[in-house]
Length: 170
View 1 (cartoon, one colour):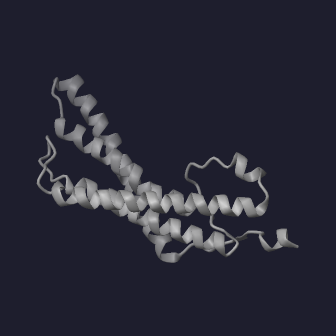
View 2 (view 1 turned 90 degrees about the horizontal axis):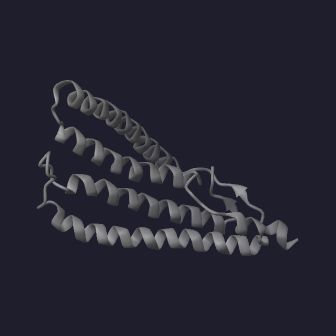
View 3 (view 1 turned 90 degrees about the vertical axis):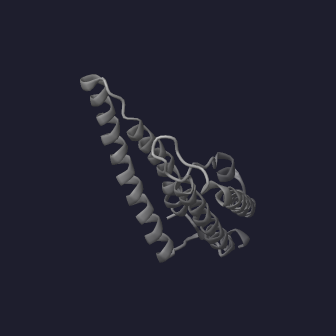
């Protein structure tokens, strides 16, 4: 009887989070295509004209960093992020629930710490510029902090779904 009370039911994805994370995923795909184009351009410029493209290298490096952080909320919302659940699957349902709740709480606390540290850094980041582009660092790091805000919100949603005996992964 108690095991039946702890059975997980699928939780519907919050529409706003779904739209935002899909938009970020689309942006990440565009950035990945930009990386490919810039790398091909760099290779062509070096091999054909013996000319380096430092701005293209910097843009592709920054785009790669953003791709990681822009896709993380999409994956977390759908439960597709990296998770080791071998031992959790072997536990009784109540212990599973507690372990999943602790994991989501840990993600939330980690996100909060990154947001706080990111905020402190962003207060100074506008003063610094990237070497080749001369772009203010705040334009690179603000989306990273925004992604962690989303991760924190998603962790709270997933925690809420677990408390309600719903399966937070889509």
